[in-house]
Amino acid sequence: MIVGCGRVGAELADVLDRAGHDVIVVDTLTRAFDRLPGTFGGSAVRGDGTDEDTLRRAGAEHADLFLAMTEGDNRNVMAAQLAVEALGAKQVIAKINDPLRAAAYADLGLAALCRTTLMADAVRTFLGLPTSGVPGIQLPTGVHPGGEHHDLTAAGGVGGARGDGATARGSTAAFGGPGSSRAPAMPEQEA
Amino acid sequence: MFVLVIGGGKVGYYLTKELIEAGHEVVLMEKDRSRADQIADEIGSVVIPHDGCEGKYLAEAGCNRADIVAAVTGDDEDNLVICQMAKHHFDVPRTIARVNNPKNEGLFKHLGVDELISPTRMILGSIEQDIPVHELLHLAALGGGELELIEAHLQPGSPAVGRAPKDLTIPDGCSLFAVIRDGVATALRPEMILREGDKVIAIGRTECETLLHDQLIGDAETAGAG
Image (cartoon, rainbow over all chains, first blue to last red; front, top):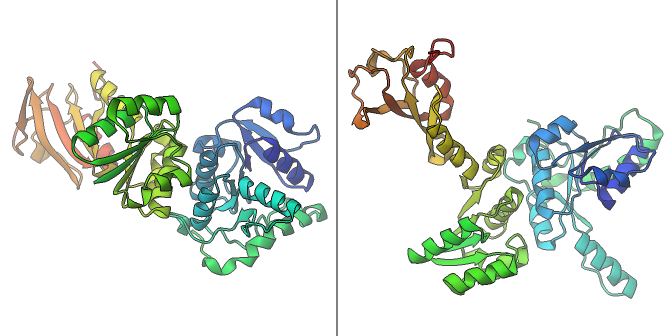
């Protein structure tokens, strides 16, 4: 489930679709779906990704992976929290470009992708300067209110590649990697 | 008390003004520069012309020593994030969020926002009061939304007409406490016989509403068909 069909959202939709996953992309603008390649086999749904009913109708319930990739940090945070709290998403990543907010929400249990840190570090690396030491995706270190209902650390990450095709395995491992390395932070719990 | 208000729309503006008049220390954050300047001209230099969603500016505004943070922007996602940042990152004891879309109320509460203000629901409530419908009217939400103040306008066919409160089955956690008859409000005594046209005022838990409806309005077929 991908909310926000910008460059990053569309790119990831394509990658995951090619890898054999069932992909649903939501965006408020139909025009945004022009970014998807002609070969895209998933579904594209027009609607507000911070609206619970819209997400449900789009089929977001119990998604193995929920990516909040709109241009708004707060919209991403809200969509991601809805996904976790109301829709039972197994793993969630929210794009949060404000480094402070990204760190705060990692503390609250959301995996936070911060473009600011990523890009600044890329430039530092290019210039041979020391990097920030903050990973591009900050892993959840805590639980946010309501976090007892889910298990963000599910070691398999997006385990449920439809049809156990070998093509899916590469990307599954990529999600599973960071997921499994931080397991001790939270006990496994199922609602 | 130090109150940090985020969002300089009409709500934020009047809230800031009233808090200052009441003698509180207030800082208002408004990201639109010209709007911020305009407010500063009117009520003084309490305005920070920056985005209150941005962690850096929240810190600069002194969020860590705020007693209350009130997020009253027009965007629910912003209000949610401001309250969460305030609560979890800056340890603010009390957070208040304006919730524009009533659908988001549940999520906000669940995620730990201390108090919700829902203008949409308030407006709907006010309009309901002006439209004669044979339903319970919601006058106000109390106790953080768990309790509701309700008015029932007794129509012909209401099972409560001709009976006294003591003979009705009032759900636990509910109380009928006043009646408005011919424009005069009186305390509702258990033995007082209710009449057609009475407005009964009740307070009760939100989930009691269906039972109250059955007792005071009746089911859809018997109530108010004429």
